[in-house]
Image (cartoon, rainbow, N blue to C red; front, side, top):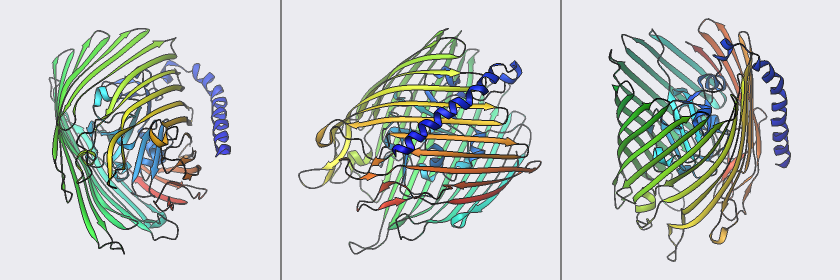
Length: 618
């Protein structure tokens, strides 16, 4: 892996050298060209209010509609892998269990939002990233660093927010996509959207099915299917008030080694927004998310076939107010949510509620900027928590911004942590963290770069370990320190689009027998390079993703080797509104794994896979 890492460093240096002449050319671009720049996009996840990437005073990555169209990934995790500060592990390809680690924290410490609605499992903790169809989304925002003061529990490593497709003007505008490829994979989607008379609407559906690939050497193919539907409607009245609704549902089946699962992932919400005054907007949102799983285990020599049901439902009421004071802005509100679990496992407690209030000040004393936030959570199951953050920014000139921040966050114990029969520990405290970060961003007309360094100290980490009775149970016994550096950049000029990211993470366990060891299943080094070129009606591109080795166990005795992946893509606009795309994932047919079975076998990912699709619509 040392060779791959040196190659990554050389590649990043080459990227910088290649970008230099482009940057010089970009600096002489006209003002009209500047208006079209997409490298400093608006971000809403970082501050709950629209801010350009450099104004957020955060480490952010935005994957826009053009990026998603070009890469046309089969999984959301393929899109996230190798992005700055993001590590992904999977138990195979195509719907198999996946974890997303933001800055070395656990999958339970990364919050997933879909159009402002949180989706997770309250029993297992974390989100089921692998059950989301990327074609249902047109944009992703990755905010790294603690966001407990804005989002409450579990935003220790950061927040990923996926946005569904925006409504197009006029219409209705239809769209259709048909494709397929390796492993007998088939992909279909259709939808239409439009607006008129103050009403905007968007409807879409998709279906994905594949025979899959083996998840262990010499094993059988493990299939996966997913059918998703989306509906969005909003209406804006003459006075500026707005009401709307969203519903997104995905369901399907997923085979794994030893059984299969039936799943449902769903978010739904309604909102009303009112301009109380010219400088005060108030928004009320009622939402519900569902994570449902039926796990069918095959009969073995150790026991008969069985079925386990895990259903999670979270209902939330959120009231958010945004007030403007000249160059300054205040965001304040309250939130009430209730988690409910049901299924074949008889938890001692099946519901819990959480009440929160929060406030954030966004102050602009140009060239200085200050962002301060505070949140109070009162949870029925584990008590109250106060989280806060403070970020300072300074514009060195018109192109460079320094930033420094401090933030706290916590991870809530899950229902399994607290109430799993015979093993749960209702006395658990939430994990808590403190993070310090410094960074600098260079934002130019046609390119940008961003450098950040951080350290997170985590206390009361929730770890499952064997007890004196031999049962495994969760305890607040671990501490950890995570340090890291992230360097990223991008160029968008003429017909070229380039992006690069290099991450170094040191996630260290600092207590118990494994003190000084790397936290399991985390890679400490990763790099990603994306290059795309428009050639008239054609487009060509590719991605190179490298990840260093990791350990499958806390004692760091079971090492999983690093790897490098090459993904290729091409597009052809062969008629107005018509296009065709070809993607080749893992083009070099690399055999790689990011996790292992308990017996030491690798969870194998798919080898070379080619997919072709034809699209109609804007």
